Length: 393
Image (tube, rainbow, N blue to C red):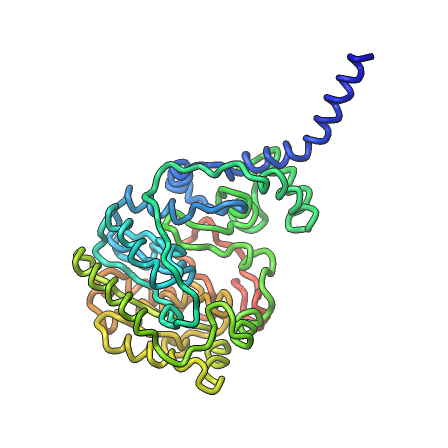
């Protein structure tokens, strides 16, 4: 009798644990536990898209690649820098974007970066709200890259099945991940993937550190139509869109300190402010002077060498359909930015593929994403903004 009870108890425990063990197996087989070195190696070999759903080591992977490859050009900034791609440059390139969210984090990150490698050109993507005291900002600390591996968390034990219950993924996709792991194909692209998002939607980071919004471009709407979410931020004066009438002298001083540091390190800087979608910028500029600090940022940039202020999309010929959302341009716009900067900067002109980019921009004008030759992630883009944008042919 005792034996039967023990066997029943063990069986009940195993049945209770089974969903958690299956979720753990899905996480493991999908590559959610891969280390930095393993991710960098697989991306080098297979052009894989790194998109873990439960943790992200994208900045660490970019730093590792910089340490390993010693690229001539490096891009640094917030998530608004992530569409600079290696295809745009005539020399080696790595995107270390998504690393710096404000002016006070910039120098600590660059200190770590320059200990690994000093590029021949630093493309610094600066957000105008970095100079607005109303937007909270504090410095962060950064680590040198090491072979880090994500730690086990409750997300790994719970989320895969939760995604099925919330209709984020289908039950058949869950079983594919369980049985096939990283060999699971997605419906549109041919890219190999690391992590659930990378595998199912080609959503994540390319080997050069740039960002592919595969889920939004090819699969599911993950934002409201138009630019409604960003326009709400402006209307409510929240997040990065808090009003500000004057430039922060303290933050300007912090930025000048960054420029001096780069000069001392012998690293030339090309700084850019990339566009906002026109309806978003128009909404900011029609609010009775609440965003007057923007004109001060423009004046400040205009007076500095190799500094370029393209917040207005029409200044470089960009249109709404070339945006990923209200504050994130697509890569066609980033090519427009570099081409416009190169007209007045020999530094930028020396490192970009001007003729090829002109050709690509002409070909993919009106779309958020361009293709250089045929790449593994090429799929069929959707009108995810709901603006009547022309999808890819």
